[in-house]
Image (spheres, helix red, strand yellow):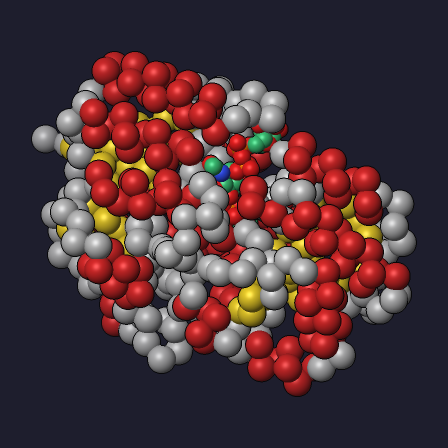
Length: 398
Ligand code: UD1
Ligand code: UDP
């Protein structure tokens, strides 16, 4: 008897982090895998589905331009209720902290369907940062009976809250997705050349600052500061900046207004994951407010400056491979300038410590879902799980 598992996701980062898990679910003899995408994102979601060749069983295509949180949440809960009634899954899987994850978890809870939360237990302790994601993540954890915590510290956060779900430490599936993608890039010189040719304007002799930014709590003054800082940095001619600009109009407006036409600043469309991973590989420094990039960049040995005051991903900050720089113009400029001028500090920053995963998170999750034995993720002193645990997972078929 196969367990019917319905994976529900809707945005770019969820799709990247669910893709390797969906691949494992599809490969399992014990699972009937059904995929529903909500289409909270449109073009940015499609880029990921195409890359990982995921053909959703249901696509709700719910996105509208400049959608509101309440409008989106209301549509999601109503539409997902119909999906749950039709698919009748034994279990739902959701990921992370988006409105899709929140709505899918609540809709499943209302129907008495068990929820597994992938990437459970991340916390800043501040409901305003990231907003509204900290609340979404907590709410999903409350209703989930299976909590897939990526790290020991996310497990500890969950334990402090006396939740009812069973906690399993798995590593973060983003490292599974990253490993699959870097393997493709590293093993295929022609692909690498093709990806590099997409950005012919880049000068290999000039340091490359790769930027992403889209957080709602930074709309307005925060984005004005970030754009001002990028303009200041570009004007020195000491760095070239590539910024794939998020499609949210609240981001694109100020970014294009302040930076289009600025010398040394290349505003580009959101990149597909292959292209973006290649660009992270080429970057000298990454400046971001993204959650996923904070996890990927340390795994690639890249220095990351995070434009936030707090992070729900403190592991790399503790390890010294990520630094919080806030959203003040002067502090961003001084952090980037200091690092550009200090090769030793960059090398120190870029120690290849990756506390977030070992590439086998998806296997662990499927093992837990199907009642098979497995070794939980344990980040050793190097940040990576013991080789024996990885080897047994690599050989296993669930
Ligand atoms: C959402 C998530 C955030 C995640 C981010 C990843 C919530 C509350 N926030 O924020 O946690 O970090 O996705 O990027 O769920 N748009 C498009 N095309 C797209 C995607 C977005 O045009 O493919 C535009 C639309 O105008 C849309 C707007 O961006 O209405 C906002 O999208 P939304 O998903 O509501 O919020 P994000 O800021 O992307
Ligand atoms: N990413 C991408 N193309 C881009 C920018 C980012 O594929 O142009 C990837 C990035 O590698 C990471 C994910 O998108 O895996 C992060 O998404 P985002 O920053 O939108 O959301 P967050 O992680 O902050 O929720």
